[in-house]
Length: 286
Image 1 (cartoon, rainbow, N blue to C red):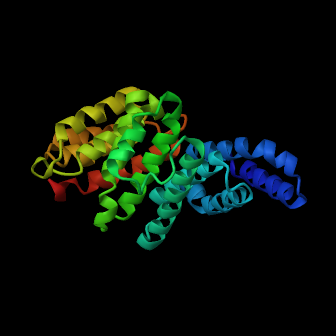
Image 2 (tube, rainbow, N blue to C red):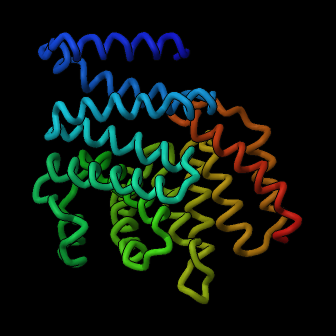
């Protein structure tokens, strides 16, 4: 979707809001938010998305404000805020605020959408796990999005031990999603599990070989289209075990691969930039 089309959609939506066409908005809000999210995630022009995304976020904020108890809108907003903060925000304080907002919205969305799902970040861990065991296949999108958004918040607050303590809950959410639907999000469930197992060396409880298996599953599930899986495989596993040959091969494959893939284009474009940065710093690391 080009820049002109996006501007036209924004203009039409704003006019509709100002005109008070509530019946039209109610029918189009969910599909518009979903289409908007897809348009951003399928865009390979990083500069356009970086410059234009704040306007999109403000628009989604207005839709959430109009329907604060709409679980779907809250979930879409959380996804967009989390993705924008992770991909484009370098200022730590600003990133923390955006990730905190995304986490609040994701938790609120799950609270509204799923049975007995309020306060998941506050209840005792055993009670949290017991609740998680009751979830079924149809709940995978909510579980996965909550886990991913929560993981982004933890990363933004990696200097806070209380935030890091939430990692076990996030890992449990993603593991449950992978158990229920291993094909979900082009192998994204395994990408995150791979990252979790390679955050620390074995001496500190990490399981790099298990992480390697997860990364390879993520690549297989996406037919190689999820380029971020290869970047994380190189950064999290190959660097951890000092495998320079694997590291350089994976990153070279990312740089040579096309970025365009349904639902992954923006992520792949970011991955290609990260791959080049990792290659450029490889001599210093190894």
